[in-house]
Length: 241
Image 1 (cartoon, rainbow, N blue to C red):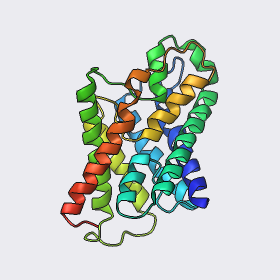
Image 2: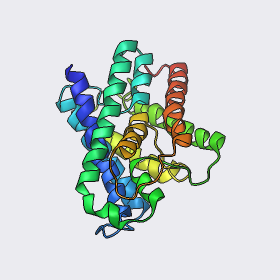
Image 3: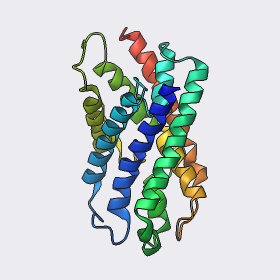
């Protein structure tokens, strides 16, 4: 139960700071409007670090915040299938609630912002060039390197990492992935990060909102899962575990 509580609040914190930096950079009359891609990628890196600290402190020692990461760890025996399903569910729920917090924090700005697509983009990802097979490929590649490099950082070959350092290293990894591979699709890499806030966008009374782009929504759910599974295969070949 504590693991689920930690994953819920950790993912909530992830989205408050992650979607929050997108709102700050996007919404009309925000003091941070037009801050740019560097601000967004740094913000998401910080968001992951803070979310992992929150998750671990509240009883989730793995601090996944991401069903794709949880799936990868299930493959090496950290989770059972029922634990994976329950953890993924609370991660998505945390994503929904975190997005609701961002909506409340920027409440007067939604009505001032006319661009419906920009408002949706605060909650979830969309491709810069819409080509579903290639969009899937990009998310697959980014998610592969997310899971693969996590295993490199925490591998037995590297050895024990000083207590408290791991979340910072993962935050740097997220920052690097955003800078390097985030351009084509917005580097979702996480079904809870994308689907949870997308559901929040659908159900919240956001002023002047448009559609939810459900036609694209399957990609940031399935591609990260596939990327994490392939990362497991490659890491297993090199006997990382």
